[in-house]
Every structure is written in C-alpha cells, then in structure tokens.
Length: 531
Image (cartoon, rainbow, N blue to C red; front, side, top):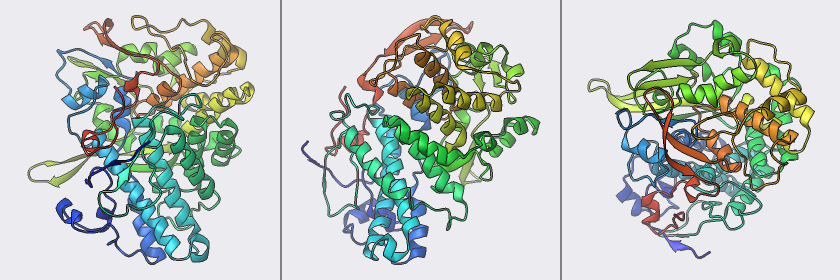
C-alpha cells in the first residue's frame, strides 16, 4: 500500500506539540519534531506518561452507532446534528468534543507520548539497563490500547477471513520524524500483530510499584484485563482465558462490583455515579477521564433523548428482558433496578453508572466542558469475556460458572443456571425482528461457531446478552455487534412506545460499520474508508 503525503495538523499526529507547552499550531509548524522536552530521568518519564492516556472517549460514537438506542421521532427536539449523524451511521461533518476528529487526535497524542517515553528510555540504555522496565511496559501498553480502540472504531473488527486486506489505522512505532511525513494505513491484521508484540513485551514487566493512584494507570490487573479483551477479539481464546485468570484470581466473585452495597446507598444519581467510579473499588481496574456528555445522555435528563434506550428496548432486548427470562422483573431481580423515566419526549430506562461532571472555564458566565470518568476496564466485563472465550473453546461448564457468578452478583435472587437450563431458555425464544424484538439476534461472525440452536450458539446468545447489560451506556456493545456480524435495524418508536417504522439497516459487512476517518485527516491525503 503506497504512503500518501500528509500535512502536519494538530488533529493528525501532534507529536511534538505534547512537548511544546502552550505553543500554537503555527509555531509548531516552525519547529522540528526533535525539539522536545528532554526526558532524561525516571521522574520526568513517569510524569510524562500521564499524557499517554487519551482524553476523548469512544463511548458516545459507539453507543449511538449500536443497537442500544432507538429513534423517538422527528417531533422529539432533544438531539443535535452530531448525534443525528452518528446514529444514522453517516460520515460525521459536525464538530463536537466527542467527534471522530477529537477521538482520532486524542488517541494519536496519547500514542505520541507513549512513543516519546519509549524512545527516551531506549536512549538511556534500554529498560533493563536504566531500571525502567515498569515505565517501558506502561508506555507499550498505552500505545497498544489507543491503537486497539481507534482500530475497532474506524475499521472492521478483526477476522482471519478479511483482516489481511481490511484497512486498519497507522501503527506508530516511533515519534514522528521530520516535517510532512508520509503515512500509509496498516491492515487490521498488521495492527493486531503489532499490538500482540507490544503486549508480549510489556506484560512480564508491568508493575504497580510507582503509581500513586494505580487505577488511573495500566496496573497489573488492568493490563491483563486489556490483554483478555484483545486476545478474545484476536480469536486467541486460550490466551484470553489465561490473561483473565491472572486478572481475576481464584475467587472472581469477590472482586466484582458490589451491587448489593450500592442498593443500600442514598439513591441519588450523583452519589451512585461517583461511587461507580471510585478508585478504591476492586471492580474498577482502569479509570479514564474524558470530555464527554455521556453522563447526560445516559443519566436522568431529558436532553439528548431523541435517540434513547427506552422501555421497548429494556423490556424486549436488554436488562428487563434478562430479568423476565430468568423468571423475575426489574425490581425483583436487580439489587440496583433500572431507572425508568417517562414524560413528553422522554422515554429513558437506564442504570445509573458514569457521572455527569462539568468543568467551568468561566464560572461567572457559566460556560465550560462536559466531562466524565469511566471504567475503561473492569472485572465484571473481564469475567464475561472469559466466559465467552470458554464457550468458543467449548468449555461450556466453565463458561456457565462464570456467567452464573456474574448473574448472581447483580441479582437479588439465587439463579441456579446450568448449561441445560440456559440452552432450554434460549431455544424457546424467536430471533429478533425490527417489529418484534427479543434478546436473540442472528449471529454471523467471520469465525466458525456451531449452528443456530446448538448448545454453543445458545450459550453465546446468553453471554452476549449479559455483556450487553453489563456495558449498557458504556459504548462496548458495538464491538460485539461488529465481531458477530449482528445486523441492526433503525426503527422509529411511536408515541405509544412501540416500533412504528423502519428507517435503515446495517447489514453484515456493511461499510458503515467502520466509522469514517475524520475529514481533516483525509483532506490531508490519508486514505478514507470505502463507502
């Protein structure tokens, strides 16, 4: 694949800008990238690595692209043009703090910081000679993580069938050199190979020893949680299980989120939201901060409610449907039931999760930025990812044990799940259509699974349902939609709360499954995603 010349732009690869404090874009263009802050000590490198974590989240893009939201119609004014474009899988032209341009730029700035730290340690003699194995490992994993996220947003999911040809992103292995560099897009397979190499090198060295607040860094458990997710997506299921074992330990139930305790707390959104992101909780493995309005979109507010996770989805496809499947209802099943909001132009059924925060830049004028903190990695998701990997290796009993642990942690009831009971329940459910939703959707993965109605397929359907509930409002459902070739139908919900009309459909291998590369990047010569 030929490289294409790319102009230096603050939203593409702003590597040197990280080191030139308060410099303008124009000033940056006048300075060679090698003129960087001198990272010549362990202390400086450790401080600099805080820049290796992106400050823009993927959650809004991926959640509103997924099947976790329905359209409540043109008469609902609670939206904006950016979210309209994301929901309709259009190429985004609107600007927003969470738009593809900011996600792309923030991710590559984080990668830039990681690469600069790696180069600095190499210049000091290498990680072992310099005694900075832990810092080197953090930089490698940060580099791998940001590449992983933007690949899964801006490209198709990994598959042995297509990824050798599918366009991925550029995997940056070193700081940018010179002006007007040339870049080509790696394939998805090449990106995953680079991530694999970075993880293989980093995992033996990762350490919690120098972190003041480990949950805001890639600590050991967070590193193995990320490796679990990566190897699951990479179709290396045994490695995913091994990494999950190292993350979760021998008693995973003891490190899951304490929903029972949350139910005993003051039932206030701010109280619950701030507890959910508590860095002392064993369930939270890696916390990230972001400029984000997801706390508004999936909080108890009417704003941004045109595209919503409402009663129909909750009762037929997601969390309340799970409670019904297991013989209960919302309040009878969950320690912390879903919160139901209903009013004019408001049909929202949510779990209270990440908080809505606001950073004032001018308290007098009351202006500033929406922000949030979110668990990028947590034990509850890792447990379900291990269950999924076990199903794919046909360790059905082990998978059910993990799923039962998750269910009985979030539920008030003792749910005695077995392979047979789950298969029987899932076999009795019809596949979802846009007019009549169920918890089952046809699975069309590029990798091999057993036929519909088989034990494996039924268990996968159940596991994907649990993952959908666990990550509701956190943006991860789209990754499973892409990996399993699940088709999404865009429907309009009537005033009576029922499907009224079908607007669009995202089919298997639809090109729109890969979000479009930001226009300011492609205008500079970077290859676009096909449309």
